[in-house]
Image (cartoon, rainbow over all chains, first blue to last red; front, top):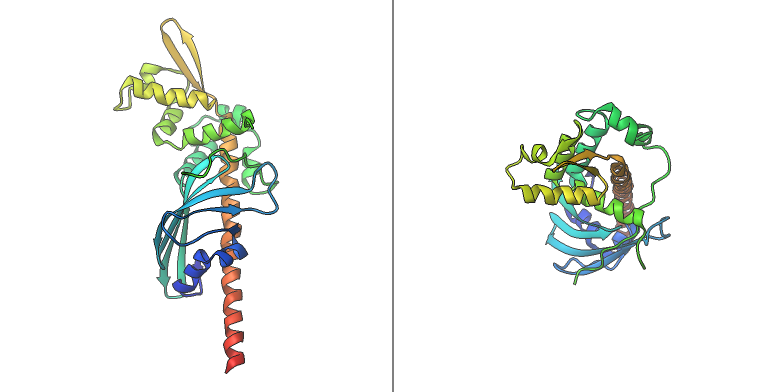
Length: 148
Length: 121
């Protein structure tokens, strides 16, 4: 994703608590290594507490920002990488734990390597759902607590 | 409060397929039922290490086990993958929307700053 704005502006949008609240979620973020904070999603989504527990893992303005993302029972890492580009700033977002998995799942579910018998038996209507239509699935409740 | 079983199990499934070795084991089992020694064969790993991976997959309900004589046979049970898949898709949509919102926010801020400096000039 490339935004027609300089890296410093994008960095501010990613690291200023009030700015973050405007496009992402309510939060008590501070751009300090080791700072523990929470995101609050409001209104609370169906089937989820709406709270994400985080800890700042990397701050390197205006290039790299990473925080742990512990919500819906999954301990993952969100990593932002900013690169100056001719047209503005190239922003890369990685939500770890999802990346390699997605490709693997998609290829299996599309039948490359896994027999269609298995897919037909176990994963009906998946491909129609994959088109992106339909309701957003419930996200299970958070189980992990803020890290000490 | 005790979490609901379905929530726990999908979290386990998520953690289970987060590991590349376990994904390879699932790939193997996708060809059909296999005894532990056959599952372990392609891996440069001790039997206990493979058994540990199989236990995690079993706890996540991603594999089923059957005992025949002295051997344990494992087979794939792919259904929990769907929950994981839904979950991944959910986050993809979430971030897609947020990245768009970030763009709108940046545009809005720029307009505001321009208006402000224009007003002062």
